Image 1 (tube, rainbow, N blue to C red):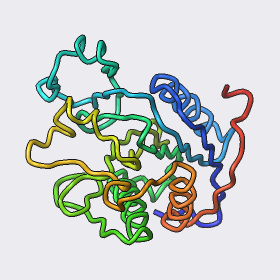
Image 2 (image 1 turned 180 degrees about the vertical axis):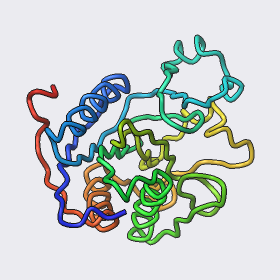
Image 3 (image 1 turned 45 degrees about the vertical axis):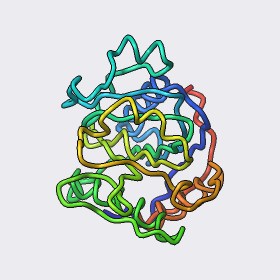
Length: 227
């Protein structure tokens, strides 16, 4: 899937509560469907939160939702594909809002392209990122470094890929990530044995996203009608 010749707007939003980011994505989807905005990439992080995909099972929570909320990990319905996952400040999330044109309406290919972005990021950092058959996401040495869950409305995509950038993986201790009992999680900072600040990761993520999707990225502010 390549959007050659089309510029994406990219918005680097910092730390955004999950519910606010989800509401923003829905507004962006509506605007993209009406061609009021170009294809768009959001780069941001969330405060601690545990999210449930449409097929998620509560048995993958290691504590009750009430106990988790009291610990500072609210549990919310995400509406995306996939199982249960955790988001936090040490992650960076890529949310692409893309109108899939006729002849390119293939969500599986879209997922594979998001995986390729994650693999390319790892490669640039000197790490070997890879796919695991039957398991969506990006893996390094058998541990998951990026989780992916997407959805589309009228062939406009939202949700996306969460990359474990920083070393704090504490939130994952409260769940069975993605419902996988036999797999662990890791972070880029942990693998690299150094800090990986958000700004550095975002620059790299934009570069690799542009290469994989074949489009330039134009940093911009959100249009006022979306705020």
